[in-house]
Image (cartoon, rainbow, N blue to C red; front, side):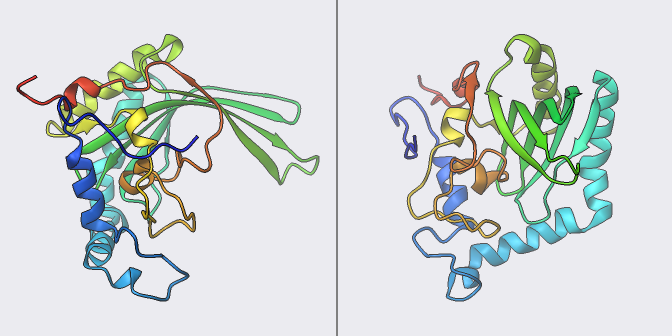
Length: 234
């Protein structure tokens, strides 16, 4: 079910998210297929420069993210997989908690985390998924079985550890609760996807939790971290 971006403004202040989205994406203007005015929007041009400066610059990318995530993986004794996509507006990685294969089925349990390049935001979530391979071993079909949205059961300790390390490195950043990240903003389309409907996660981070693509059970607290968004006078 698709949910619109919504919150109680008497208690919480999520306008920072909306402001970041509208600054970089022309809400209400169709992306098209490379034509039209979408890519002429000043925010899109500014975003393209951010991607070049922070990701396409290999030295900057290594210093700001690769070194950090490799050290984090060693501290947790887990395998680190870089998932940063050159067109998505975030640094992104995953830690492999479990990987097993039975015949043609591969099962993985991963802790994903991303830091946005267009605002002071980060996300963390666990992902249980399966991939069934064809007999030739070349092609496969993937499915998300569950998304874990807070420190829950086997994800508990690594989830909290990663959050603490991210908050140490990015003291001004706030975790975006899954329940907010999955909401959609009507008229929002991102530059790196053809989807006509995009959620907050795709605008701030990447496509891995896009509302149109993710199916599966939710484990844990969908609004984990929301207390950080409370107004100071509450």
